[in-house]
Image 1 (tube, rainbow over the protein chains, first blue to last red):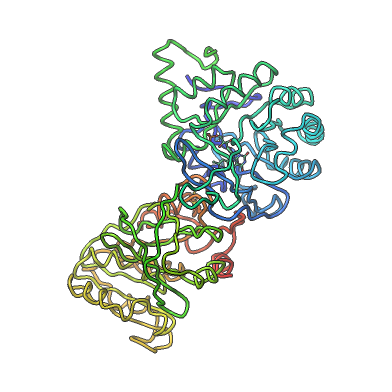
Image 2: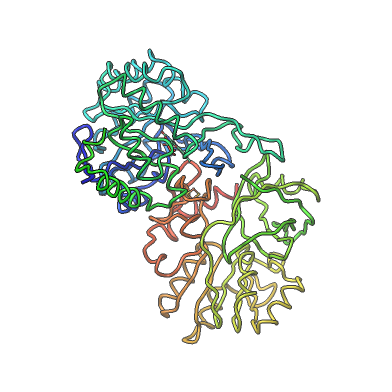
Length: 294
Length: 267
Ligand SMILES: Cc1cc2nc3c(=O)[nH]c(=O)nc-3n(C[C@H](O)[C@H](O)[C@H](O)COP(=O)(O)O)c2cc1C
Ligand code: FES
C-alpha cells in the first residue's frame, strides 16, 4: 500500500532517513532499515578527514533541534570496510557527498560509483561550514556542479537544497536543466541562538541550523515552490514526525519524505510508527496507493 | 537547552582528577550520564558520582582541553548541564562491582542501592584510588553490608594485581550480577569471565559523544548507540555488539582500534 518508486528505484515505504542522522555506519543504518525506513542516507561524506565543530554541537530546543556538527567525515578514502559493506544494507542507500570545490564532488562521486549506492545526494546546503552553502545559493555554480558530476555518474544525482536563500525554485530549475535526476529539500534553517542566562551562543560554532517541527511550515512552502518549478521528483523533508505530516509533504509535491530530527522525538522506530499512521490515514480517506495522494 | 549550575566546591581527588560539587536538584537514574558544558571550552559526558538533595558531585579526569580549563575553575563558576541521558544499572543485591580508575565514579550511586555486595576497586597506584579517604563512602558501604577490596598495579595499596584477577577469585554461583565500569580492556575481560561463569554482566561503556540524544551517530558501537541504548549494556546486548572491546570512532567518524581511540582522547 505504501510502496513507491523514485528515480526508477523501488521502495517499500516513502520514508527516508535524512543525512547526518545515524548515518555513520552500516550497522546503525541497517537498524534504521529494520525499523521501517524505505531508504537510508549516509552522513555526508567529504574529501578529507575532518573533525567538525566542538561541542556543544547538537542541542534540543523547543520544538526541534539546533546543530552545528560541522560535517565531520573520515574522508572518502578513509572509510575502511564501510563502503564495501554498503551492499549489506537492506534498503536502497542514498550516499550524501559534500566538497569545497567542484573537483572535490567529482572525485568523490566518481570513486563511489563502484560501491553502487542507489542515489548520490549532493549536499550543497550545509549552513555549518564556512563555504558549505556557497554552491546552494548560486544558480550558476549549482548548474556547473551538477553538470560536472552528471558527466562522471551513472547513478542518479540528487542535489540537496538550502532554505536559506530566496530563490529555491530557480536553483531547482537550474539543477533540472543541468541533468539532476531528483531534488532533496530542505536542509536546516540557519539561526543564532544565545543562552538566555549565560548570554553566550548555545553552540560552540556560534551559529547553527534548526530542524524539526519548528521548520515544518518553511519546508512545506519550499517544497511547493520547487514543485512548481520542476518536473523531476522531490525528496521532501523538514519537521516531519507523524503520518499526517508525511501526507502533507506528499501533497506539497514530494514523492519521498525524509525524517531526521523525528528520530529524537519519537525514537529510532519512528519509521515504523509513521508507516502505520500513513496507512491508517489512507484507509480512512480511501486512498489505495501513494500516487493517488495529491 | 542547558540548565545552569554553580560550582560550590572543588576537591582534588587524585593527581589526575578533581571533583566538582554543583548546586541544583537532578532526577537521575543509576548509571545515566549528563553533558557538562564549560562555555568556551567543551561539552562532555560525565557520570554523577554522588547525588544529594540539592547538590551533586561530578569527578573529572584532567585530560585533553578540559585539563587547563578545570585548573582555572573557581567556586561560583556557572556550568551548563543537559540530561541526564541514557539507560543505567538495574541494582541487584549479592553482586560484585568492578571499578577501574575513574570507573569508580559511576559506581558510588550503585553502591547506595545494592546490599551484601563486594566492590573491587583498582587503580595504577594508591594515589590514583578515587575517594580512598572519603568517610561518606565508608559509611555507605557499611550501611548496606557491602565490602570493598582495593587493588593496585604496583601493590602500593591493597592487593597487588588487577581487578580481574580479584574477580576471578570472588565470583561464584551466588553472584547475582557483575557491574563494571572503567577502561574497556578491563570491561571486556570482566565480561568474558562472566560469560564463562554464566553470570549476568552490566557494563558501562564510553564513546565519542556529540548529541547525547541518539541522533548524530557519533557514539555507535555495533548497531547500538552508547548515548541512548547505553551507556550501561546487558550481557545480551554486549554479545551482539561487534565493536565492543575492539573498535571506536574518532571525532571525524573514522573507525579505529580501541587503543588508538583512547590515546586520541587523552591528548
Ligand atoms: C544533527 C544533525 C546533523 C545533520 N547533518 C547533515 C549532513 O551531514 N548532511 C546533510 O545534508 N544534512 C544534515 N542535516 C540536515 C538533515 O538531513 C535535514 O535536512 C534537516 O534536519 C531537516 O529535517 P528534520 O527536520 O526532519 O530534521 C543534519 C541535521 C541534524 C539535526
Ligand atoms: S552521541 Fe549522538 S547518537 Fe549518541
